[in-house]
Length: 251
Ligand code: F6P
Image 1 (spheres, rainbow, N blue to C red):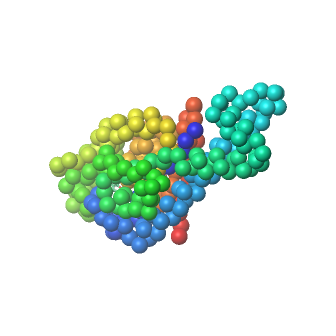
Image 2 (cartoon, rainbow, N blue to C red; image 1 turned 180 degrees about the horizontal axis):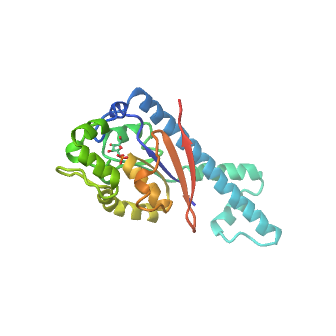
Image 3 (spheres, rainbow, N blue to C red; image 1 turned 30 degrees about the vertical axis):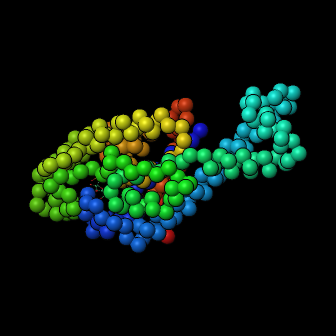
């Protein structure tokens, strides 16, 4: 089992003005979130490792009650060496080893996303910046507010409201949700294939698509998903669907 955490970047100066797209930096509040995020993930990672080891230990005790050895040879060796130690000692030391195992942090190539990962050390985390995780490109409407678009391009505004999924922003590089779904496909395959836990720090549209995919939302519903800033989602992939938990950071 593994943990998949997904969140948006911390609050940016463009978020304050309600501007879409762009490449703004974090506000002081956004930076506070970034700090809290590192601490939170560290704690979650530790308690997950503990939980995993404790479950395994309990399982082994059950086998032993039947006079059977654990099937895991490496564990058997460790169990013998650990013969004189208390159950809690064994659990703690195994959990320490586990929590040192690989954990990936993915961000987009945009400033606000990278800055949100700035507190994660390269020693403890495998950090990657990936262009595919960038926010939807709003073409000629980059850095405008929704009010400005509504005022100057009312037809475009309406068209997008009527069909957010297929509406493509005008101008060079402008994208629709469908376009973003397409470019995320290789990444989603990679996410499903990898076995280590990870944190993805991305943007509103990309977050909706990743969560929507993992939680099996329809394409039509997904662009309307409520995903506030500073909310952290944890998914644990299970044989049938994913288990979801959500936390909201408030100073
Ligand atoms: O406002 C933040 C933002 O990430 C923009 O950069 C982006 O265009 C927008 O949200 C996407 O949300 P929606 O699809 O609801 O307009």
